[in-house]
Length: 109
Image (cartoon, rainbow, N blue to C red; front, side, top):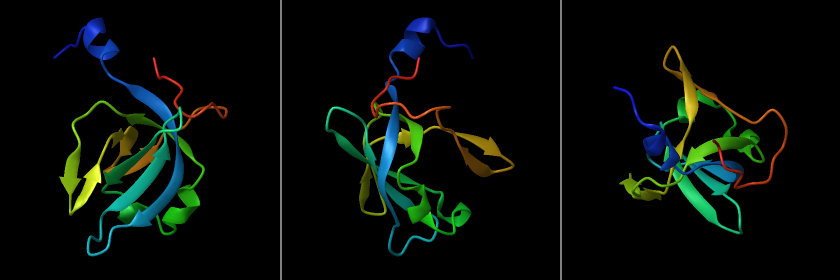
């Protein structure tokens, strides 16, 4: 199924900077990220990435694309306010990042 240019334009994808990341208690697969998404706004995103990162705190400061205009969803008692955009390699997430550091909140087009 193809999407139109207008469909893509409705997506609010921004480069966000990880300000904190931690494992979700009682959930072996989940990480809770806090992102700086620009203009002083912070967002929490819950993602099933814990098995792939031995030291989640090492992700602090990393920049990655995050889809922000999705409906919030409660996952294991934690509200997720976005979705991390990552590649998939044999079922393993590969985090994407800008080639050079950009301001948090930079739009992805």
